[in-house]
Length: 177
Image (tube, rainbow, N blue to C red):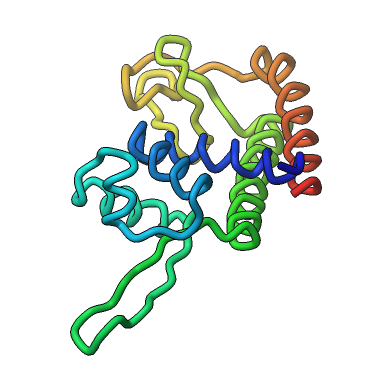
């Protein structure tokens, strides 16, 4: 197996586990090993019942991680073959990586522009427009616990370099797909 194909398979298995748990891993592993399969065949190989197979396949199809081929066997019967299309998978993974990098970039931008406040109790981060002003003293308070919100400069100094490194690594991964 080529390095790129191995990386795609590993990412697919990880995402299948995140989305569907062990059943997702079993289904994807069976498809990677055997190629296109019907749900009945997947059920036999994985030991999962047909309802579980259909649930997993539906979730993975919705996430863009699997493809389906419909083949009419007769007037009243259609077979559905599920498979991993590496080109479609690559595009889906690139899209997920790009969205993740954009979200991280937005977080870095908000941190660098000092647009976030942190609750010292909950550790939640809030944008300025999400904060609530308490009447006495016009202090910004946490909507969850009521604590006074604090500046994120301590977080900014530690986290921004880590986030920028992660964005760089995601960009490299995106290019390698």
